[in-house]
Image 1: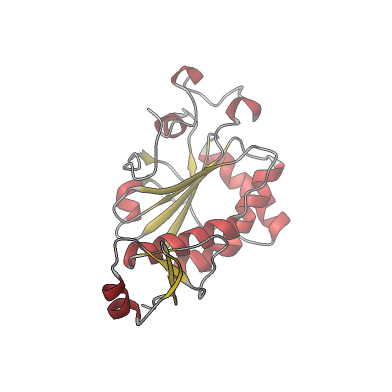
Image 2: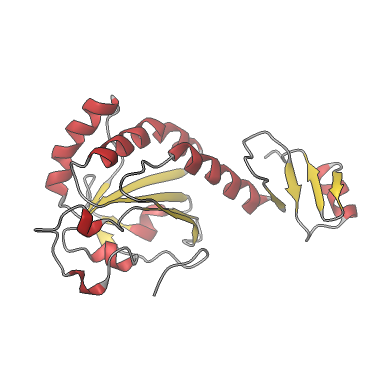
Length: 219
């Protein structure tokens, strides 16, 4: 069954470059970004893993852990990390899951059940659908999922921006408009009355009968 936003992220235990990880326990009471790759030593993914390594302090600041996954074994990941650092200048210190039996990829419906149970002999094209980013909340539910083709490098600045929005809107009864960035005005949700909006946010601007904006709540 395909996964949707607000579904519980499937739990699993797997070996990683930083030791065994039990996913839900590893997330704890924070947030997590799980991002997948079809195969090691592929050019686009090499640039992606390096860029994420550089962004790690930004995710840590947001109480968010990063977890990579490729269907190749952990031993191969350790070798790949040298190439990633060479290309990006960033050392990969977050865990990378080894999924040589394809168990996690299947659990997240990135590969079909009939894909077999071994990464051996599989090409990147065979694993082309293992290209999804998931944001998972402290409640272990999927808050966002984005799937990219192999030839399009992912925009992880956008993942960070989306995470900011998701964390903000989880705490306050607001939504964020198109192209929103930290510090910009937000939308007051329909669930908040005008009177409550005055109390909660210190005022608002009515742009349309159904569209009210206010300064980004702090804290």
